[in-house]
Length: 592
Image 1 (cartoon, rainbow, N blue to C red):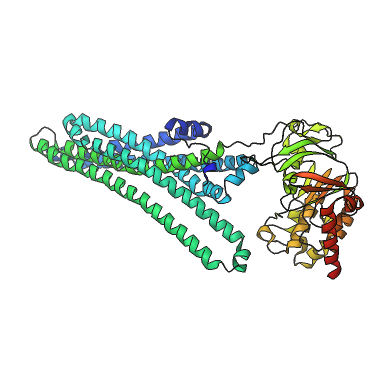
Image 2 (cartoon, rainbow, N blue to C red):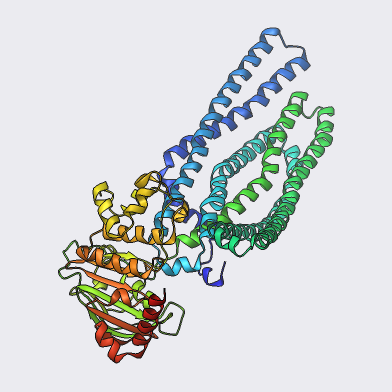
């Protein structure tokens, strides 16, 4: 994770954690109350059993026991056991069920929040990190809020109750039993802080591994083309080794904490066997009391041993929750406002009024004092690599904030419009084509779920891809694999273009979205989509000049500025860069 990503400090206090999860606990408060009531019922019923055992042992010791008495006590114990079984089922269903509902709601909340964040956030947080948060970290939170919470409440209640019953039998013996506990408390506090630090490192390493695996698999063709299989495998192996080392460091703490808790519990048992045995031989307590006391001590042994386990679960959960909360506290730099619901007259007209722009955390301006008006019709944009063309597209599609009074859609400042209103007026075909692992029909109709197959076929014909789709087995119902891996680059771009055309929006922006097709096909496509562009604004960014010769206006960009503008004929006369690339491309096309 980059240093930039660590803008927020994860919650470190119980209060912060409760505040963050408070709404979920309140939402399922009835379920939790019933669940913990059942848990308390289990504890209460378990505490009754030693009392009946004591009664049976004492009656046997005094010779007053009868078959009826023992059978009655056995029946009571059986009834208690049935009650314990029922209550145990209820708390598992209700409380463990709550932890699963919490996991679901947190995941849904996280997904909804991620969809509100802007490009700046996703540049700082790789996909692998977000995947790890929604899987590994959420699982740790679920476990802490499920079994961890149950074990904690059970341990507290059982400790108080067991100590109370032990004190009722013999206060002195109870003090002897708890004598080793301060040592356990100190050790737990010391080891828990180390566990938190080490587990945080483990989770961060898991995020890095997930991102590395994702990027490698998604780029598998490039990896194979450059014969980097062995190198990528070696790199992943190194990351795996580091992940194991970090996990072993966590295991060392866990390996000390849990057995140490058991050691302290067994020390208490040893003390009770010695001192309790003496008190029994001296007649201070009865044999039944001694057996009951040991039974309560065994009940107390579980909480003592659970301290280490619960501390482990809570530390893991708190660490993961801190990472999740860091994401949930992230705010988009591009703030949205409620939609006005008003129509946007002249929405196809774009005005940039002395607009300048630099990416966050960068001093150098990418766009410099752009003062242009783009009217309906076809407008072309050309320029050197790095001249700011794609950045201009990012601004036009509202991926980054701009100053008031610098960007107008129709006669409205975009800062007075909601993001959905602005983006809902624009159909965008980016440089990097994004397709989903679904059918071709789904990918074209994205954004227009009500689109008919006839309409889908019409835009596919306009994008010059219909015939190729029909040649594929399954046609429009064919599944194209992740990122359209089953299609060629040109086919992917034309499907993306068809997806933009079907939206029928006032503005369409094509950012070098036909680079994978030949110049002749690109020119034919631009002619073919002319009917869809009537009374619309179409901005085409291309490294090729020939397909733009019929544009109403062509803008030439260099170092973030508009250095020339005019028709194709005008630019051939006034701009050397335009004239040069047109000449070179024309010669290259003739030679082909």
